[in-house]
Length: 422
Ligand SMILES: C=CC1=C(C)c2cc3[nH]c(cc4nc(cc5[nH]c(cc1n2)c(C)c5CCC(=O)O)C(CCC(=O)O)=C4C)c(C)c3C=C
Ligand SMILES: [Fe+2]
Image (cartoon, rainbow, N blue to C red; front, top):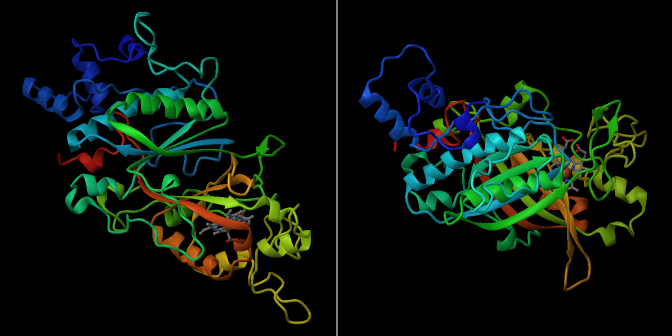
């Protein structure tokens, strides 16, 4: 690691070789004079420092790639999700924010401090509560919400599909768990590492963003022979069994391809977050038969009703000897599967104290899905909204949609293509 990376600041006398490395141009023998260098500096800003994924770091997910981390990455056991309000007024300032976040995100995902302490007379550059921990498979995923495009004029770069979700039957959406200009999803195998990442990214952006809402969440990931199994939600059912698997399927369902979206979003994905309260007290008074009929799966094995294996095919048209549907047509899975759309679910349970008015647990699911177009979620939710048996046991209280950028190339910064014509 170079000294300038350790210090986290760009040396004013940065060498031409390092400048090429930082800007991702590489040492390909490109002749650039003083004016060319000026162009690079104005594109990236004098204080943009490229950091590298550390291939020697333990329990580490790479930051750079075709798609952002934290989407198809195997789900970690913790999330800290933050929705932010942007305070800056110009697109240049907004771009600078993403430039400042980029090297910090790489360092955090390496399990490194934001920067070393060089002067004890100033507050520590890193808040410090992740000291002694490795990267814990931390992933950071950045997205922008519809309201950002109301604050800044990006012209025809605004995708038509990036808008707040419609109202669905039974929704009781509260503004204080909803919407936002920017989201940062931090997932890690340790709750404090995830929180530390958000805390430091928000700190770096002090005065430029405020937090609108946030939610911590958790999953118990069972391990069998060293392999992670499907976590159970707070209704004790395996949640995440039927999900797109592999890059080809993800490219079909999750990541927008060219011709499907604006060019800055190719390789990106829409994140939908729904804070869904689960009425645990009602659920706990419900017979097991009824619970299984609610989902259309057996609780313990996770198998489709009438089958034994979690991954056995869910054939919703299957009939018994009396000609009746085996999987009830009011069950959650029957309805979710009755429509063509698919999505990638990456949800986490939450428990956030007590609901004052009822004394009930304020607990449930921070439902998160990724899809190349929000209409995939809307089609499924419309199907569920009509008659899902599970609706008796849940209330949707928060809603947000964000366009998550494509992956970042080394030398570039988060969301660069959105700003490319500045
Ligand atoms: C609009 C999308 C969905 C919402 C909102 C939603 C909420 C929700 N789901 C569970 C629990 C389970 N969901 C399961 C399957 C499943 N759910 C959706 C979509 C939404 N769920 C889909 C597309 C699917 C897959 C259907 C299929 O093709 O088989 C399951 C079964 C196991 C699994 O496949 O993961 C459970 C359990 C809760 C508790 C919840 C809100 C609180
Ligand atoms: Fe579901």
